[in-house]
Image (tube, one colour):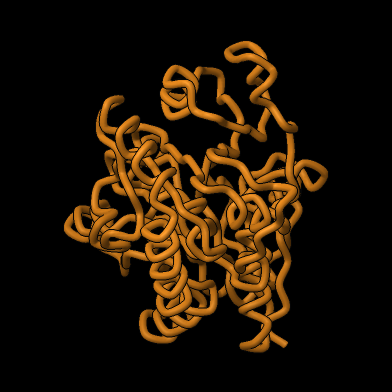
Length: 299
């Protein structure tokens, strides 16, 4: 069996399972197994102790740079978030580069003289499929922590008086506890929330929206047959067409939420179209097939 090392930016193994990056890596690893690869997921506290025995090292570049020498015969970076925190020099530490933004990849292809391809995030249909559960039927839901500030999409919903339920940490500082359901919900069961709510709300860090990095949550909500309203991300219409509804101002947000809360048939049609789009083009099986093809071509 060949071996692949998947490094993620979670601080340690104990915390890793609370991070979306872990489940992202897990889904990748299971797909690599189909190509006869054993995989290991390595959190930050393990990076320095990893040996050089791997055929492939794939660094999922989120919050942190991978600071150590090459760990494998082929070293790959998949830049999935936080574009403001990376320099051009960092890309040169790897043999092959993937960027989860059509916009930024196009810019970088003229600047970085190494094999570089756009590669969007994806979903895992094993975990994310339609499963509507009456226990989780809500008008609006939001899943996420505060990140130290009152996130815009939540503020818009609360100020407008919509019925909203939140799963995440740190919200007591900003909103009434009547909106809060729990601080955590298991990643491999999130489909229950996504499938059952009328509308899932989403937002992005400003550097991600400006640079065209589409939130992984959008892929997972659509895979679950859910309906999502998000802030605008550059290039999102190229990927999802009309299946994802974007808002541009607070008034636009209010109007779109009110409209779609009262248009069940249209919500269901867009949700079904979105799920079909994910299954056709945006699963981890698609991504691993692409990665292996480019490794064979470029290395």
